[in-house]
Amino acid sequence: MDFDIKDKGLATGGRHRIEWAEQEMPVLRSIREDFARERPLAGTRISGCLHVTTETANLAHTLQIGGADVVLCASNPLSTQDDVAASLVNHYEIPVFAIKGEDNETYYKHISAALDHRPHITMDDGADLVGTLHKGRQELISEIIGGTEETTTGVIRLRAMANEGMLKFPVIAVNDALTKHMFDNRYGTGQSTLDGIIRSTNVLLAGKAIVVAGYGWCSRGIAMRANGMGANVIVTEVDPLKALEAVMDGFRVMPMQEAAKIGNIFITATGDINVIDVHHIKAMKDGAIIANSGHFNVEINLPGLAKMAVSPPRKVREYVDQYELPDGRKINLLGEGRLVNLAAAEGHPASVMDMSFANQALSAVFLLRNADKLETKVYSVPEDVDQEIARIKLEAMGIAIDRLTQEQEAYLSSWEEGT
Image (cartoon, rainbow, N blue to C red; front, side, top):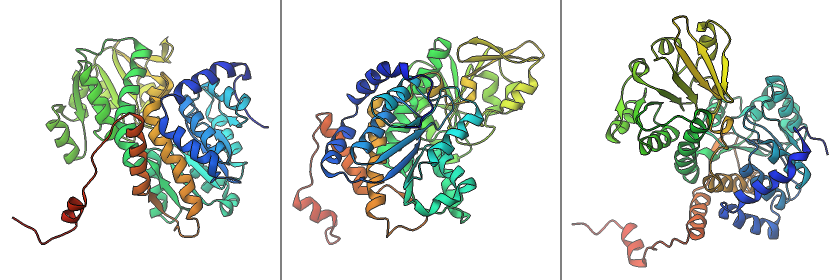
């Protein structure tokens, strides 16, 4: 078995953490039981470009139980948990090409290795696998049935490809499932982002002015959690509806240029480029902390920040690079501007990834069963799959809900009755 990881000797610790995460993933366990009986993915090669974490390990094992031949590479150079990668190779016999802190050349070499698997299904988190496939490995496209995409940024890229007629196979936007973005993006990103900031800096959030760029699902979660920890939350937005929602949720809303003057901690989660730019950094206070929780490290103008500084950054803590400006002010960048929740912490809690990865597993089955019907475009997760995942999750939590009576169903489908 070919693989490229940091150290196989880390496997035992990785296995313990994978099993710990599994306890919080009842939906995926339920799907795994079905997969063990039915083997719906038998003979299917799956290449996954995902964050190599304990939760991803449980997804990969579930796909394997379902009959799939799985290979993994990282979807971010800093998100790999090396002990998990070692356990996947050593205990589960799943090839992994991922090392935490790998350089850009190694990152894409690992993506190429995952594509050498000649997948029938791709699983992406950010669309780097699909992008690389379309740019340089088009000879593999004829074998591909379809793909799945985990995150907002990846879905944006894939829809752009589809709109330009560049996408060559159907992809399911797992991110758009309600059981994904309403929970993973909001509660997962909200908690794990602050976890990454606290672990990397050990600063007290209460009383700090925290500026959250954007007010999509991820940013909502960050703002909510920061507010709950006593921070003074400011939201910046370009969308008037989202800005209005932030105001109605009780947050101050203003342009980034104004927020830059009063913020202590800045968090981006928009999916766009240069959300924090040079002119914003010039206005920031001494000691300002900047972190990113969007998929790519482009939301902060990193080249601009480096050019402003009087010298290369000083690493003052493991995940904190401190830049000194000409006037002596210091700006602190967390996690090299990459996903702070994965670079400096462990990513989303397993209980929310349970639903996200249940969507991944069931979407793979949907692609296989409907291969001859699907067009070359980006699809949403089928509503019945979304509903079933929510039902299993509630059941696992010991929560029961009401059902419509026949009378109520008839009323909702009729038009005769009025006031």
